[in-house]
Amino acid sequence: MKNFGKLFGIISIITIIVCAMAACDFLDLTEPDKTPVAGDYDIGNLKQAAGGTIAAVTVTPKSGKSSGARTIYYEGTGNTVYAKSTTVPATSTSVVTYAVTFDVAAASGWSAATGLFAGVLTIGTPTPVAGDYEVNGLAQKFGSVTAVTITPKAGKSNGARTIYYEGTSGTTYTKSITLPSAKGTYAVTFDVAAASGWNAAAGLSAGNLVINDNPTPVASDYNFGNLTQSADSVTAVTITPKAADKSGGARTIYYTGANGTTYAKSTTPPTAAGTYAVTFDVAAASGWNPATGLSAGTLTVTAARTLSVTILGDPAFGKMLTVDVQKNFSGKVEYLWLRDGVAIYDEVFSEFWYRYWINLTDTGKNISVKVKCEGKTVESPAVTIQSLEYKLSQSLDEINVLVKEDDDWWELSEYYYEDFKVQWVINDTLSSQEGWIYILNPGDGGKNSRGQSNLRFNNNRLLGCDPD
Image (tube, rainbow, N blue to C red; front, side, top):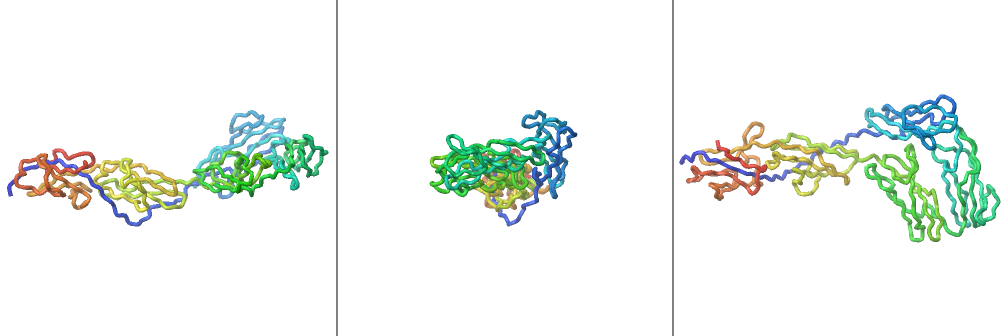
């Protein structure tokens, strides 16, 4: 056969490979570190006498809780001025109060935590005030009147309360501990007996009891929603009248830590994992009394869902990438692979795409994977696929395209078939030949030959690459 000499080739290649994927599980459900909460600890020395040496507040982990080192802070509250400090306050001859918080250092199996609330350090013997108590039952329907309730808030005196009713605003009723039953308005006051660490108090105002013909809302008039949530997406509990004949008065919802969870009563939904008592007030509405302190049940906030993904494997042509998924919740995991931030298989997630074979198009590019589970989606850090070495190889009567893998040169046709198309161009004229191998024709000698496709391979072409 005629000696055609050397042919200079220029080739661009694009490959789209659809990988067949076998069922295999790469999930790692290792339990993540837990995070301490205030309810994990016993708190001591929150009430101390005035005039003596003040002992540090004690914060002791309960059984099975984090033993990480605790750092305790004191900060003046109420009328007490004291900048936040780890120094135990000095004694005082008057009643002073300090908000006590603490940090917990990381320990085996436990994350660190900061700003946990331990309570209020009170030095001296305080006297109860009306604001120390929750008052409910001040608006009631004639014929079904029950006693006003006065309940101490957390950390306040639980001394016995004696409640008095006295007519006001035109209602005649001599001050008495006997609950009135007639329609009218009654001033409610109460005394608090002395208790351990607390003085007695008398004549505290609880507000006015109003008895009229209007019904008073009760908790069973309402439906409650969102009482079980995850810490990574807490929204307000919903409280909705069951029917049109129930009070539509505005509802104000309160959350208070319960069952070992520390959270001062607030209208702000909590965000930390724990258990919270949910109560609500209902404003007066046409034909309805107001109501306070109604129970909506318990909000349970589970630990925040964590989901992460890392790509494993050798980032080189012909190799397989897999994923390492870390999560602390159950659910089906689905995958979406991306090349330079663009979805490789359209914007469609699949539970079967947990691995990926690297093809020619990927070389020199950044590959990442998105993982979705139960509405939560994360993307892995990208890995850069190694650039590919390739060349043309000429025999007596044909030219092949070779790629280098593991220090060896391989013909493309050994790896990819129908999904790859090569078009050969001779002296800038498109040849009728298509395929992995160019068969030399009589008359090609001395001409320039190059393989091309409709898209460039790795955005490059082989320039001046002599066939062997």
